[in-house]
Image 1 (tube, rainbow, N blue to C red):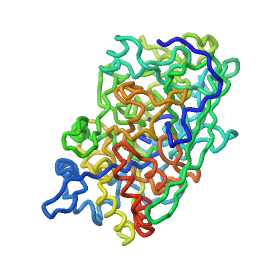
Image 2: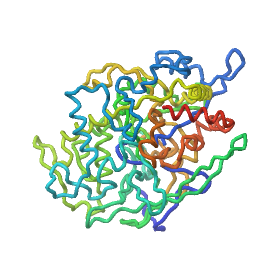
Image 3: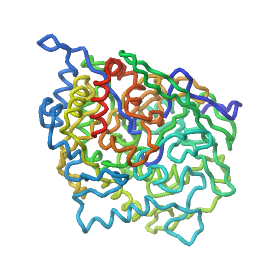
Image 4: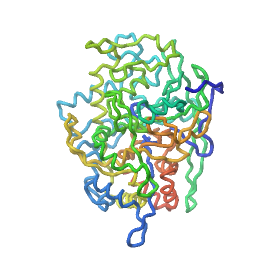
Length: 540
């Protein structure tokens, strides 16, 4: 571990030159379900015109979809149901909060019980509500719904007076020993945690337990000019931590703000076979298209074995049950069989000595606050939040925007369609569905502007792992389904991992790295082209 250095209690870690950062709860997106515009290649077809994709990538997309690219790029009636037979046609603020439409009446009760535990706040122990006490001692929010507003995406604080309920700060230290480096390389540990603040900042504490720090943000306007002279004004965030409760932060501490991801369609993403995700990876860029997506390989806390990561901004969680329990533990300070220890560091004595709400389970299991029954109900709920159907999918403007999306090669990262298998489990609603999530679930380097910073405001080295195999520059491609209804669900919802983008176009324009060429193509769009692309994205 690195030694502790004295420094100011407030720090900027995003500069005014378009430097970025990162997210919040259960989750666990590449950048609010932000869209990542992946760059096209310079491959040339027989007719001499540039192709949007490397031939190998196009073949993989078609194999996963089971249909030719031409069908994907034009009007496809089946795509109206982005979530297959699980989807719904609601277009209100409740668009993200309904159960899969194909869930049976006998199973629907499990959904609503899980919904109750997801929505209602936990309280400090001891309390008369024995099944819902044990909040903290350190925590970010008291309920899942506080982060995932109406089951949707979060937003960054709008001002220094705004709360950070739907945004959290992940922390990681650089490895300093050969043993730490070996553990990280083999995914035996998620990260090297800070000795006093751990792997996530908790900005609240119960009575008698000091919060770890307070989160504030300032915004700086950044104009970007299109080829036709149109100016889009982006905003760059500068996050600050004030009132540190347990000593100064190390200058080399890597800090990652992350807003909450939307909860829709997670059970469908969980059913995409590992091999379908792995076959899309091209970490060495063997096809020379400048896109080198890689999959994260993580330690599953339930099995104690390494497995493919697919959930969260950096694909650091293997499946929904571990994602949920990690969020309960880190965001609300609640223990479960998967995460049985309080989220207190050894030096946080008040946190360690606080009263818990843990109940005995028997069978030699440790006392926990979130028992297995609650775990199962919440898992069922998060697995069965329906994806809303597309709107206006056959509209001429939308189809023109869809053509631009495909012509520019965005599908190279945002894989449009999958055919889910029928597996040997009880995920009945998801079995055999044809879905259109627009994600490869891989990690991509999105450039310096979107990379996390150290607390001192510097870019970390690219070999510094912050979440298993993921570094500060890499983000998991977010699914785009339902994104057009994000601000219908919550008018304050924002995009990208740290909530800096207020519109979908802003989200595109922040992308760099593997998406730089794509962004440059977008900047060449005239007013009509921008209108068409936006219409397509809003239809999802």
